[in-house]
Every structure is written in structure tokens, then in C-alpha cells.
Length: 348
Image (tube, rainbow, N blue to C red; front, top):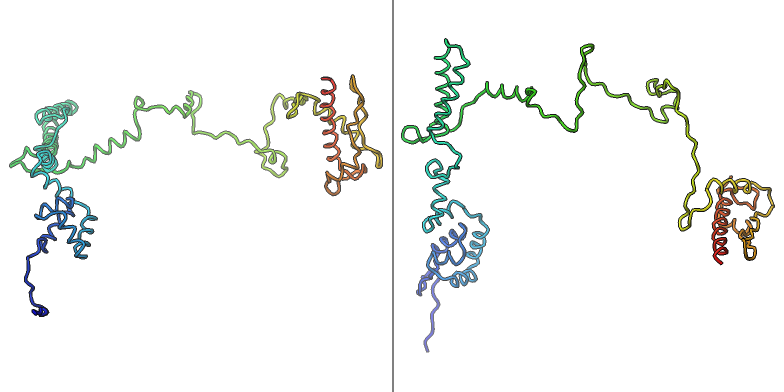
């Protein structure tokens, strides 16, 4: 019987070499971190997707490296450079972005270098017309130098060897100061009126407006009756005297759920004298006989109703201990019941 001897520690075990070795694992993780899918990265290193998945299950360290590669942000430039090898659109995109002066798209309204140079000549000619003749040479030299600087900044490839001569335009402090002054004090033909702001008054030749004056503040009700208030807060006296006070005209008010009935003023006038009767007298409404039918007693004794409507302390009268407010509510309720019964009797 053959027995197998254990291998020594540190000795190299013989067998088939692994398909996914350490170098391929590194290349696979780099491809995944650049934005490639697992299948594309596996095809790049020459293994199948199933081999990568089996190795990730057996090797925890490799599985952790794949997870980190998936979470890494891909490099857009590296992706476009990789796609430009096989796709012409990706190559055109790289040329437009890396060399816009040579391969960038220009809008239809853009001018050529010749047209730009002619436009600069028009500006120089206009400046020479405003300058005196003895200063034409000096003004022309200054404007020509400035035009060449602007031309080289806009068309940098028209210099020697096609290099960028000036990356940005020079500072223009004088022009900026004049533009700021125009923005602060615009001419009248450039001022747009605000529709929400009233137009300022026109000053006449007799006086001059020094500034805006706020309207006087009107005193409140408490300030008008306060003897210690400031004198300027009191209302101004009118030359024709105070306005006439209009007396309130009572109108018929509609009770919720009922048609227009008695006026509130009439009801209060009828309730007022009855509320102040002597102590011990029985508070009852007179019996009202409708046009047809028996008489109806609508008002019960006050003593039976007053316990349900307690009055505040100090406001009780002699009518069974009920307050005037309780009596008012009782009579108002009885008036409503009376009106309802009269309408029912009229219907029958």
C-alpha cells in the first residue's frame, strides 16, 4: 500500500499554473476602475467571466480589490482615449477639445482674421477723426499697437511657429472707468422708467426741490386721547369743521335658519323694561292669541330656567337670582319660539 508523504513547508508544489495570476488580477482591477465592465475587463486579460467570478469567491483579497475598483470614479479622458482607438467619433471629440484652434467648430457668425483686421481699421479711423491733426501720428501708433495685441489674443495661431502669443487680453482701466461712470449716471435716453415707482414732480422756476419729504404720520386712537402725547400727533383741525356724524339706521337682520323677522333694536327695546322688574314677581310673557286657534303659553317661569344659566358674581337682580344677561337670552329664545308657532298657526 502506497502512502503519501506530506510536503515540506516552503517547498513549491507542482501543478498546472493558474490562469488568473497576480499580474492579470492587477490589470483586471485597473480596467474595471477605468469604467470597463467585468466581461470587458476579463476579455482584456484573456480569461472568461466565470473564471473571474470563481477566483473572487476563492480569494477574499481579490474580491475586495474588485469592489474597490467598482467604486472608483472613472477617468473620462482615459475612457475617451481608449475609445478613440476604435471609434472615429471619439477621436474627433478629442481633437476638438485638445486643439480647438485647429479642429474646433466655429459658429456661422464668426469672422475671419481678415474681417477682424478690417474692423479694427474702422475703429482706428474713427479715433483719428476726433483727434487733432498734430496728434494723428501718436494716436495711430497707440491704436495700432493695441489692435495687434487684441488680434494676437483672438487669433493666437497666426504668430511665429503657430504658438500662443497672448493668453488673455490686457487690462483696460480707462475704458472700465468710463463704462462704470456711464452705468452710474446713464444718459436720459437710456433711462427706463419704473412702472411701480411714481414719477418725480416737475420743479417750477419759483422754487427748487431740496429732497423728498415723507407724509405726516396719522395719530392712533389712543394717541389722540392721550393728554401727554406729542402735539404733532394730534389730528389737524379742518377749516370747514368736523364732518357730520351719521346715525346708524337699524336694518332687518336675518336670523340663521329663519326668514327676516323682528329688528334687533325692537327686540332689545321690548326686553329692556321687562328685565328690571321687582323681586318676587313672576317673569312671564303675555299670552298671544293667533288669528285662529287656541292661546299658547310660551314663557315658562324664570325660577325653573335660571339655574341652567348662572350669572357672574355681582350681576344678579331680584328676579329669582338670574342675571340680566340670562333674562335677555330667555326672552330672545321665547321670541323665536313665538314667531315659529305663529307661522305654523298661519299655515293651518
